[in-house]
Image (cartoon, rainbow, N blue to C red):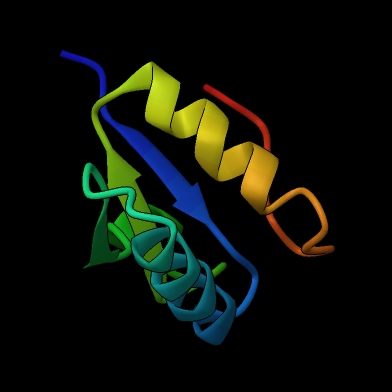
Length: 72
C-alpha cells in the first residue's frame, strides 16, 4: 500500500490546508507529525493512502507557494 505525505515549509500551512480539506468533505486524510527523516523541513504533514485524494490535495493546495509537490 502506498502512503503519500504532503509536506509544507511551515506547519501552520499544513494545518490550514487540512482544515480546508475537511471543510470540503474530504475524510481520507490525516494530519500527522512529520517523520523524523524530513523533520528539518517541516513539523506537520498531511497523510493519505489514496492516489485520487492526493490529486485533490495537490489541486487544492496549488495556490500555496510553499507546498512540496514532488512525488518520490
